Every structure is written in structure tokens, then in C-alpha cells.
Length: 416
Image (cartoon, rainbow, N blue to C red):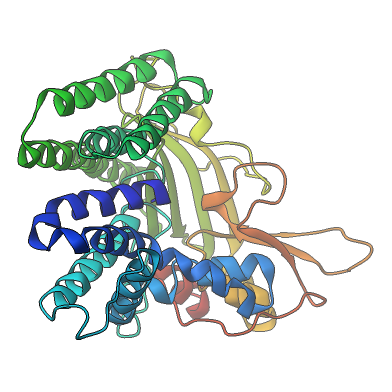
């Protein structure tokens, strides 16, 4: 999730726990919760260790700091930074022993919540490394979900007593509402529903005076958004699998991704990788519109944009009135991908991250044999996106490759 959402979760946790500590430690508690809710994203500082700019980000973002193994250490750092910001002494005997364990516990909970929220989307996390290095994907929430922010921002606004802080939260809320209205990615009916949701949360937080009730409303609002998306996602996944079982029974499905756009739970991008009967690696891309008759809610074409890698015709039928629509198909011999992974260090490293790997031989007179490679999840424009780069015999090899794993990688390396 985005760092504004993570910060708001830290604020919510602080408000829920502030009565457990003496008021003089309240600021330390606040910054401990906020820092703990964002600290895992400090892994961006380690991108440079790979020596390969695109791959460094792909391999190390949501890396070691998003694992359960390191959360105790990160909790200690969160408490230290939280107390440092507020100039609060946190070493015994200056801090009472009963306060320090509480701060450490809250920091640890914030870190776990951060990892849990990051698992909601299609980017994925691998929290159980090194015991289980596989990526785990939630495929449920877009990385920035305004509906969750509309549930949390009013709570932060009305639970804050400082004038400057209230002004800041108010500006953040107004900016998010403006972004929903004028970003140009949503249709008018979706915008109206989002604004009604925001107004309802704002009115509830303004009307309610008891802090516990405000806290409950914020949590229920957040849970309602996640529950709605999760319920729809379950149905989307079932229908996608049923369609494939009917239209391509000879293929072995390896990976299925479902991902909604922001605000609208009725439009989902869909991506499926499978191994065909001839030993081909096949990836299909499309979208699922929950209510085809509601044009204002089901304008889903933007979820399957034209990207850097050229898609071919789809070899499975597209139901003329169905909710699942395929927009393109990519296909490579599986043995070629396996051979490339053994001779190209960049592609082998990419498989530590890529859920839907793609390659394209480039006609490059300067560097013969150059290969464009990337992850189709993030191929959203004609130019090179952040998950795409040029490999080949002249490309440098990345250093310090982590041990992340996935079913996609194991299938390609096995060649079957």
C-alpha cells in the first residue's frame, strides 16, 4: 500500500493505545507507531547493492524488511527513531520498564500490519523467508485505494486536537477527493459513489463524540472496503478458472492474477500463465467486468493497456456477452525460457521477482543479441516501465541476488 495509508494506520493504532501510557510519553508513542508503520519501505535504500538499477528495485523492494524474521529488530529501531524524533529518553532507567515493552509491542504490531496490508495487492510479499521464500499475492486491493483513505482520513481529522495537525489532515482529505474527481481515470458514476462514501465517513466522524465509537467506525469502514473487494475477487477467480477449464482444458494453469483498479470493485484486470500441450509458456491478458450492462461502472479497457511487449491473437474463444474479456496473448517455447535463464544472469535474476515474465529479441545494431525483458504485470505503456530493462551478453550482472522463489520460476527452470 501507499505510505499515506500506512501512516494513517499508525495514527489509528496510536489513538487506540494512547490511554495505555502516561501523557508525557504520548508523542513518543505516536512517532513509534507512524515510523513502525512505514519502516519496512526503507528497503528502497538497499537498491544500490545489486549494481543494476531496474533489477535492484525489483529484487529488494518489499525485500528483507518485509519478512517476519526481521520485525523484532525493526521494532527496536522504530522505538529508537520514535523517541529520537520527540527527544524522549528511551533507555532505562530514564524510561519506565513498563513503557518500553509497550512501545516495542506497538511497533511490532505496526510492522506486522504493514506487511499484511502489502500482501493485499498483486505486487506480493514473502513474509516467511528464509523458511518459505515464495512470493504471496493477495490480488485484492489496488496499491492506492481512496475508499480506504476516505475511511481513515476523517478519523485522523476529528481525533486530532492540534490545530496545525487538523489543517494537515483536512488538506490531505481535500487533495484525495480532488484526485478522485480530476485524475481522469474514473467515470462519473464511480466518482459519485466514492464521494458519497467519503461524505458518509466524514459525517459519522463529525457526529460521533466518543473516541471508541470513532475508532470503531474507522476500522469498520476499512474492513468493509477490504471485504467488498475480497468477496468480488473470489467470484472473479472462480469464473476465470471455470472459463479456462472449459476453453483450454489441455493447458496446465501456473499462475492467475486478479487486480482491481482504484475505487471501482466492478473492474478487474486479469492475467493467466499456463503451459500448453506443446510445451509453450502462454500468458493471457484481459479484464473482468462485473456488470457489463452498467457502462459507467464497467469501463474496464484501461486495465488492459497496450504495452512494450506485443501481444498476439488469443487462442481461446471470447464470450461475446461474457464478463471475462481477453485482450492479448503472449507465447514462448518453455525450453527457450529455460535456456535463457541458464545463460543470461539478468533473466535468471528477474525470475526471482517476475510473476509473468516476458522477453523480446531487440534489433539493436550497437549491442547485437540484446533482449528486452520484464514483468507483464507492470507493462502499461509503450516505453520501458520500471519492471523492464534490456539484457543480453553485454548487460551487467546484478549482485547480491536474494533467494525469493515462486511457482513461475520453478516451472521455467524445470522446463516442463
